[in-house]
Length: 244
Image (tube, rainbow, N blue to C red; front, side, top):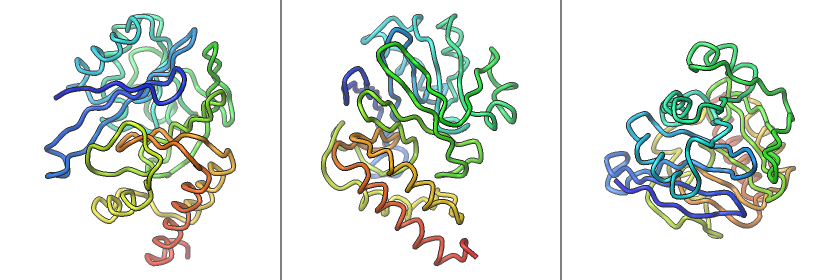
C-alpha cells in the first residue's frame, strides 16, 4: 500500500491510503489530516497496522516527534487505533477530545491523560485555530466530535460524506451522490431526530473545504453540501421511523 500526500488547504495535509480489500472492486481510502502550526495536530491516526505508512508520510512533512496534538472524530480503530503509537513517538503529544470521549474511553485507552475540550473550545496551534464541535451520534458514536479550522475554513468532518473508490485528493465535484451510494451500501450512519439539525449547525459555519476521512476532500460551497446531506439524513430517518 502507498500513502499519498496532498496539501488541501494552506498548512493542512491529506495523507491517504487506498485499501483495495475494503469495498472491492473500488476499494476504500483511509485519510488522516496533518494541521501544521507551531503545535501541529494530527486528525485521525489510522489503525495500528497502518502506523508505519502514516508515520513515514508525516516524516515527509515534519519530524513526527514534534507532533503536539492528536485527535479524531470518534473512538474507532481506523480513527484512533494508532493513538498510543503516536504518543510513543511524540513525547510532548497529547490526545484531545470532548468530555464524553475522555470520560468513557480515552482516560483509560490513552497512554497519557487526554486533554478534554468543551463545546466550541478553540485549540490554538499557532497559525491555525481549531474549534471543537460535539456531534453526538453523527454520523455514529455518542462521543463524536469534529473540528473547524477557522483560518482556512476547513471542516475536518470525519466519516461524513464517506464514499468508496480512490478519487482525486481535492474535488469541486459532487460528493453527495457518492456519499448516498456508500450509505446505501454500508448503512453506517446513526439515524436519529437530531441528525439533520446537527448537520445544519455545521452548515452555518459555511466551510470552504470539507476534509473527508473516506473519499476526496471537497472545495466549494460546503454549506450547500452539508444542507443536502441533512436533507438525505432526514429522509432516511423518516423512512425508518427514527424521528418518531
